[in-house]
Amino acid sequence: MILTTQGLVLHTTRYGESSLIAKIFTRELGMCSYIIKGVRNARGKSKQNLLQPLSHLELTVYNNPKHDLQYIKEMRPMSHYNGITQSGVKMAMMFFMDEVLYKSLKEEEPNVALFDYVVSELRYLDQTAQSKDMPIDFLIHTARHLGIEPMNNYSSREPLFNLKEGRFLAAPSAFTSFTDSNTDYFLDATSSNYFHSCLSCSLSHSPMPQLTPSQRRMTLNNLLEYYHIHLSDFRNFTSHEVLHSVLR
Image 1 (cartoon, one colour):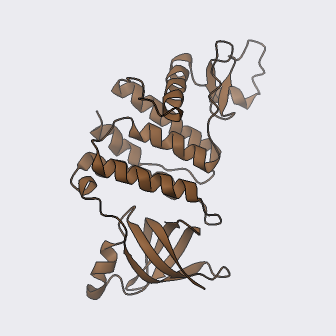
Image 2 (cartoon, one colour):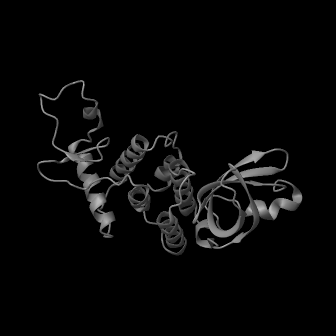
Image 3 (spheres, helix red, strand yellow):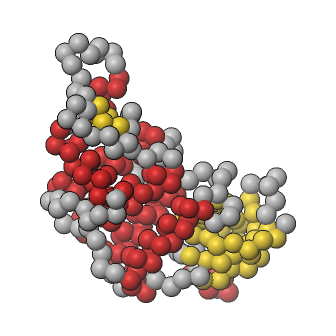
């Protein structure tokens, strides 16, 4: 079957002497693997330029559900991100978004709402000044689309966020069993308060709280740890270190 869809390039791997296997998050089919022949020779340079991280493409593809590797008949750019490519900070944010998606998405299911959200975020990043809070906001909204949204049930009785439970709980008491592994996943009171504030602002589309660089770094790292706990393939994450260095 041949169909036309939009796609976001997430990752490429060399295949044979002149080909690539591209992992592409498509709007209608979800994450798919495509073999692209002849892209690494001189004549294939124009195609290779289309396969940069988070390139937004219109694709005409062959889709056979019985095959793990599919083929692309035609591909052409859907969007151009001139504002991103001219800013090192924006490029770092784009690579961060790419790694989050690549390590979060499975190949089985489409996620149209997430696809449309990512496209809108790329356009926002391209056209506006870089926000230092965008990585935190992106992780919170993407978690919602992935079905792992943290519960924002913060209260004076349940003030500590538990990364494994995905919600705020009362502090462990002296009678809590030391064999209860959940006690290892509590954030402290300060970290929980920042976590709650960012959740509240992000989900209500309000400006983020004013955080210092160290507070922002801590909250971002806690969110990445939350992803690691709730998504089995989310590990060996690296792009946030570049973000930390450029967002100081």
